[in-house]
Every structure is written in C-alpha cells, then in structure tokens.
Length: 362
Image (cartoon, rainbow, N blue to C red; front, top):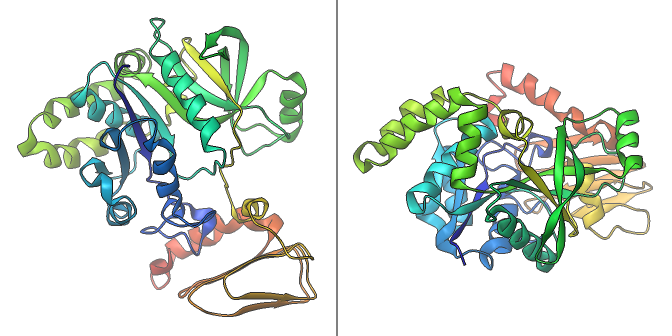
C-alpha cells in the first residue's frame, strides 16, 4: 500500500463557543461534545488509518502548547503557523511537510473540530478517498454529506454523475463548488438531489495538489516554493517560517483551488457528521431532561424548557422561568443568549477586541 499521511487543521478560534472557547483554548481543545477534546477525538479516528508518525497537526503559536498537551504522542509533528493565513496556505504548508517525508504520498486535510460517532464507517470512507486519490487519474478528492435539510450555514458541492466505483463505493465527478446559499437556494439544492454539504475534508497526492497550486494560485505557489527551499535547511527553518509564511496569500483552499479545478471527485459520506458550528448545535448530542433542557456540570432549570446550560469549575448555575436560552458559565466569563441569537456572539467579541480592559476575555 502507498504511504499515506493525515494533516489536521487545528488553528481556528471557535468564536461561536465563547466563553469556553478562547484564543489559547479554542473549540478543538475542549470536550464540546464527548469526554475528550475534539482534536484528540479527530486524532483517534485516524490513528488506525495511518500510523501516528504520519499524522501532522497545523496550529497557531497561541495554541501550540494546548495541542501538545492534547496530543503528546505527536510532539514533533505539531507545527505552528506564525500567523493564520487561511486554509490554502495551511494546505500548502501541509503539502511541504508531507513532501519532505515522501514526495509522491497522498495526504488528507481534515478539520480538528467535527463530530463523527460512526468511526468504523468513517474509516472505510476515508480509505476510499485515499484509494481514489492514488488512482492514475490525478484527482482531487473531497468527502460530501448528503443534505438532510436546507442548511444555509454550509457550502455545497454539485455532483456531475458517476466517476467510478472505488472500494465498492460510488465516487462522483464534481461539477462545481458553491458558497453558503440563502434559504430558497438551499431548498432547491435539497430538492434536486445533486448536491452534497461541503465537509472541508480533502485527500490528494502531493504532485496533484502542487500542480493545482501552480495552475490556479501562482502567487501563492511562488511563495510556497520559497518556503520549501528554506525548510530543507534545518538551521533556518524556524526563521524562514517566521519571515515567509506571513507573506503568503490569505485565501481559502475552496476559493484558491477547488472552485477552479476540473479534476475533482466527491466521495458520498454515509457516516454521521456535524461541524457543531455554534452552541445550539450541541443539543442533539446529549440526552435532555423531560423539559428538553441540556444540562452540563452543576446546572438546574426550574420552570423553563429547551435551554442549554453549561457550568464549570463546580459553580452552580440556575435558570428560572426562561426557555430557549444558552447559558454558559466559566471561571472568567458568563454568556446568556437566546438560542436563535447564538450566531451573534461574534458581534460581542468584536466589542471586546476594541476595549483594552476587556480584550483579555477573548
């Protein structure tokens, strides 16, 4: 079997999970769903697919210590970006790290913070994606989820019919990637049966994704070539990363490569999947009380329904006579927000950024 690698992107801030998720301890370093930090769960899902020595984590300087604590077995394979430059630059750095180890290998780019319970089916489909990427057709492979509702918070992938069977599973050719739609458009996507939710999971061989950078993002590719030359010299590696990485174009891999490429295929994923984008999304992963309240930690609700109440550090948090709230108490900050306004947490965090006395709570 060809050598395979997994690169996990663990640099996000998880702002919509404030106040538990902070700059140094974001969503993927916390047990938002489950008993282990989400990054640890992601690593555990892929450890049986590739050896631990072939798993990289790309994170930020602020989160480097936290990632090392969560993944002590990956110490030397945890790499900190000097600053965030979006997912295309992270993909380019991943490509260079894998290329140093094996210039023809296939590698998966995976987010650190998704919830997947059916790990057996996930392993089967990720292996299918690897096998497709290793075919002589030089394809970029992604995994897509068949939509169950007209979600407006996800990007979509339109398929163009069968590509071929791989590992007994149908793999589809991709017609196009589309950004997050409005509700009417999302309803049309759902009704057509031609679309998948874009999971942000990708698999490709080093030469194939490098060719895509060269063809579709030449400026970014030129910067990566400069960085590659420096990374081969251990003495200047860290200095080169500090100096060159912040100059790379800041753009998502979807915009830079996927939307422009014609050699993309999608593996229809049949495992459960949730990117748990904000606090209300966690409710489906826990057993509520008789009134529909999800309670974690020392939390109580009296005369209220369908609340999410999370309390840490042995602090008792009570909600009386209120419904459809998210209440999150931590040692330093407390959040109270109606469920249907939970996406607006970012506006509060923007105000915190502008207040020197309150920036420490980010």
